[in-house]
Image (cartoon, rainbow over all chains, first blue to last red; front, side, top):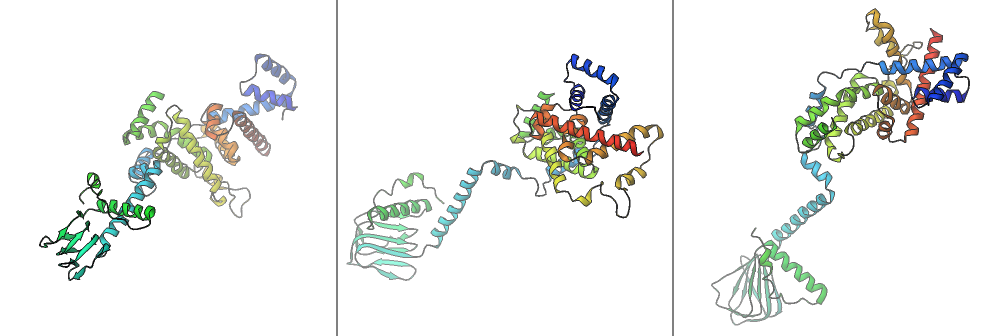
Length: 224
Length: 191
């Protein structure tokens, strides 16, 4: 052990190569008379030279192959490029996930929607077999007729719009429709219609007439 | 050198597997030695060294090209080793004394089964002794000593690898070195 703390500090400094020439000379002069410091210095040198002389061990011969095999054949440890991309773009991932779920939800609503005929206004309709709704001869419907997942036969009059959601209008009918006949056979169109209905409910409290502005949706609807 | 590496890294980022194999070949020696000196068990060291490269590969996009690749890679390796040492069960260590023996551990077993030519004995004894002693150091001194003297890295690089300031690196090297010196003296007295 060095004879005192300041000398030990100086020994460290010299060994680390951070001492000035003057400090080195000072230590050399001291070590000529101090056996403890001399021994301490040489022991440290010995440790360091042993550490530095250690031959580096050669890595096992198939090291690189091993790494490449583990990279190329991911056993669940290594992520696929798609997973890597998803990991790096969490917001895009969340958005994609949301879109997939929403699409599934909307499609299922569309597919499972029951047969339904609604009159927004006054007038009677009759039901027939095969999910067919009839506006009987002589009957006048003052308002809109909305049919979902069915067929409609118009023998009387409709003083308003006829909205056909995933439904058909049987052309044999000789009736009269003063408004428009809207056929909504695409999910997007239906969705747009639903959105507008919902807004109408929220903002006007009373069910409003399906407006004539259904047409813009045709600009961005895609046949499914 | 660094241009060559950056060129290879860009190729890896573009999906070139072979470029990564070249990177592994360039650094496997150093990474394996860091792991071996920190962990001391060749099979475990190999496994962790390979894992280091795999982590580097999966996270290659996070590597910032203005930094030094080796520093980044050694940091991954060192962290994995330190994690390993933290989790390691004491029973798995070569340092563990064998039951029913007095100061007799697995190193003695290894040495006995691995005789070396006589002229190498003195040098390799010192080196074996030293590496066994390195493994007895607490991991924080061990990592500083290995990176400084076995890998010959600068204090600044070590500070980046271990995420500690340069003065702390120095302190750890001094303390580790001092511990080794004391053990050297103690073992000399014993003999």
